[in-house]
Image (tube, rainbow, N blue to C red):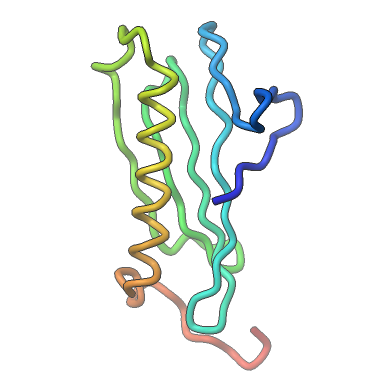
Length: 116
């Protein structure tokens, strides 16, 4: 699972995004994975304190083939919020990758064309 830095984001000494407590969001996870001979992009993002939810999308050639969202407003007062959100993001990202590999969204994946 690779974490990619967004422009203007900060990473800690281990290359992990951090939460600055001022409403900033944790940088997301972005993974490219091959399934059925095609490359899918899985993206997980945190909405931050203003939008306390984690969203994950599975893309194929720019088209969303699966999405999920997990709300976490009850965790906002938690002293270990950044740790809790990081765990939610990691779990959700891994679950979506696993679901893709298990074929959970095969019915949403467009047929492969000759030009793909």
